[in-house]
Image (cartoon, rainbow, N blue to C red; front, side, top):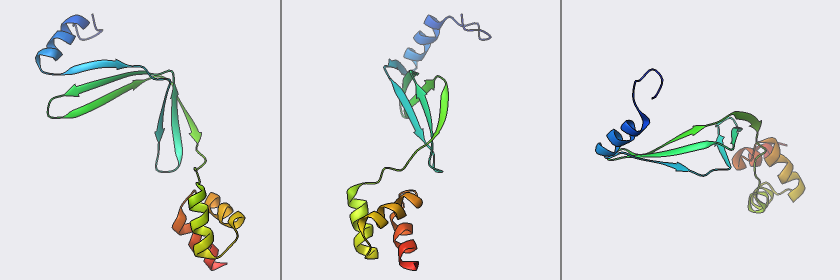
Length: 115
């Protein structure tokens, strides 16, 4: 029985199947949610379920303990080269500007051109 609902989990699964819904458990080691401010929520060893609803697509349910972390931006060699060429500065300076601007190429170029 599901507490407060008075439903047997098997009955619930059968009802969902009759409505065309399909739910499956997914194996996952880690789930990472990236936020616009550059922070991340990391959930290790989560329980993940995928629910497919006809006409609605897929929905995911993630259960576990989330830990916040500040993500260092991933800066590729191509980004460094581009900033270096556009701002006409050495690669080391371009990389530093990218790190200071959270990997934002345009901001990095503009900040280097102002100096």
